[in-house]
Image (cartoon, rainbow, N blue to C red):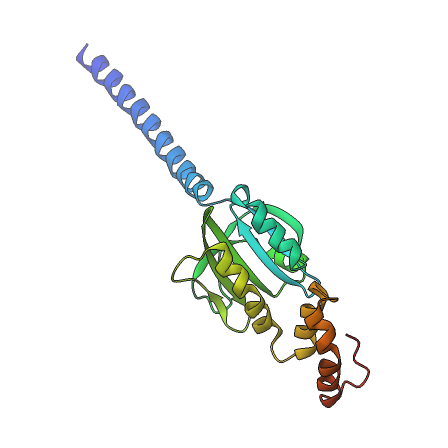
Length: 199
């Protein structure tokens, strides 16, 4: 009788151990998925004709004002999906952004990453293959972003004044300031050796 009781207890302990093992395996499989899901947001990718990108997440927090500004600076919505955690080209810093496959698909080398914190605040990072990933030390408001976006794009363009001028004129070609400056800009372009510059 005692022997049978011992066998039953061993079987009972064995089944409990199997159950505990299964639970541990499930937890180990489930927790990373939960952590990944917790840090993944829907993003919206904007792109301009120069193949520069702006990745904004979470997509649901993109305001109409931000969308309108993207449109006003000739950035169009091209794709959306789930963010992934990525590092810069020099393996420095880390941020959520579009997947590498999406970046390659749209031939984007340089882009801006925006994390919308709330209606009035956002974090802005810059991805450039030469400098890697630069992350912000503080948050910005939409007006500050608007005031500095052209400067960032001009940094992307490097020493190509023709592209800078074209973009400026493209946004408002008939303004008095632009009409007044066309002759001066044309002379400047001719001095750079671009005699047949089309502005």
